[in-house]
Image (cartoon, rainbow over all chains, first blue to last red; front, side):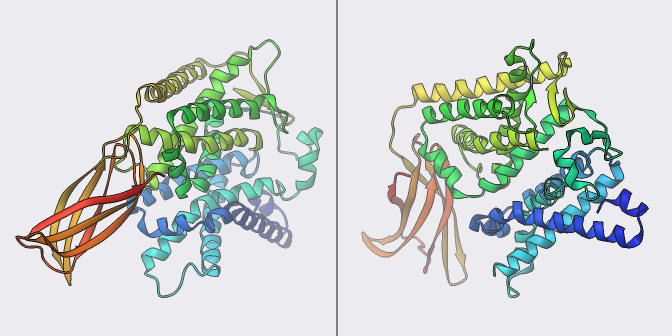
Length: 297
Length: 136
């Protein structure tokens, strides 16, 4: 799959690494897609979701995959064209894997109408395609020197093309948070539990949830020392990062939550307070996803 | 900006103004959200679900008659498993009745559904009412 290198290499080596890449993508699609492929509500959404909302979700996924591929696909070496190619492969893998698993689970049968089959596969292909891209980068990194990539910090120049210092632009940081939030949201938003929780909660619960979501987001990235933890330089007060990253991150998580809830038709004919409550509930996993994305990607 | 050097991320010291602007907007949105929820928490009195039903469509269908309606819940409490019963009355006697159950009728929101009768109510009285619910 590592095109630039694959083309340069000899034919057998090239096609082999391409197949390994495909395998990793498929594994990623499985790994990240299985929770959703085995969720009943998503099967049902496959046939009752409003078609233009599904269409919008499928279209929005395209630039998202391209940007994600550009960011993580081949680490920092890829061109825009390569990112597009990667995104296309990931989307394709997502669709094929979703279809295969749904058929295996007996959720798609020959007598079903075509629109139902397509709807089910289409809605699953979004998280599965994100999973395919993540699988490629997280299950081993680059195909040539993949194993050394992880443990060797001094390996920065070793890969030949990986610069040892890159700047992540602010917009990209927000984008990564959006991807993380979207991914976790797609996992939990279709379930009935989200709205049920929102109905059970009083406004007081909601206030605690907001505070906790923001605290977890900040703690994940700055306080708890995970691998890839962001550091604030000594003389910078903590609230600088809080204002510039954590709060915008929470806002991104809220917006993504609202978008996902709307896509799944959970906001229709609902009062503002109820919308807000569901969004707050969904932003809790969203915030964790957003914070995790900053660390992992 | 975040600078990634040898897999460590360090926030740069002099951020672009746009970062502060985004931060300010986000802070406003978050504070507004919290304020709204807090306002609700203070002012919201404990209410019981309160339904009103409005018929939106009456139509002959194949092998039956459909009466579509909206059910609105004006209270600040959500009701679950709301059973709505439709009855055709002829001079006080129930000629036909049919039930439908809504999973949820959220607070201050409305849901819609339909009851299917086997016959056209015609000029006879048609009564649709909620007969029960559970707290979610």
